[in-house]
Length: 150
Image (cartoon, rainbow, N blue to C red; front, top):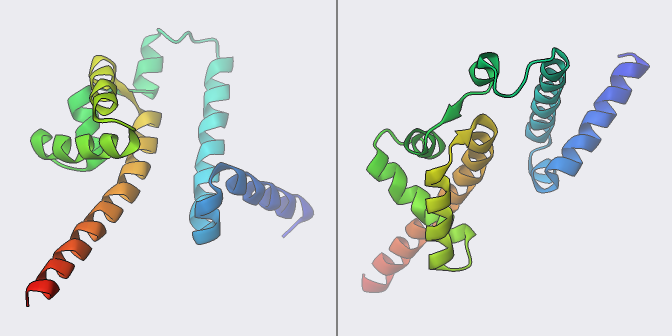
């Protein structure tokens, strides 16, 4: 390994620690992969911007597709049916909001817009963590209820 490789590895590890410090402590290789992906996307975006294309060009929409609300929610939740996806997505947004009304307002705002690939990726990561915790909490409550009755 040359000196430049170790320096770039060190810089990549430092970037990973800044981007997602909690994940970096739990799973350093995964955090470094996320940092690598971020750098790759940033480099391709810089290269794309330097070519002179405007945001409203056809090529932009091909390279950075947007998804409608229904498709975006289904991709984020990894559910095939929209009603199931919306059930979990609504609970996820409620857990991130302070009030019920605030959650409904966020969902309505999302309905009016579209999801970019970056939105889907970030919501997808956050949703996966939330759903894992949600399911384990439900299992813990169910187990406690079974043990108290029997």
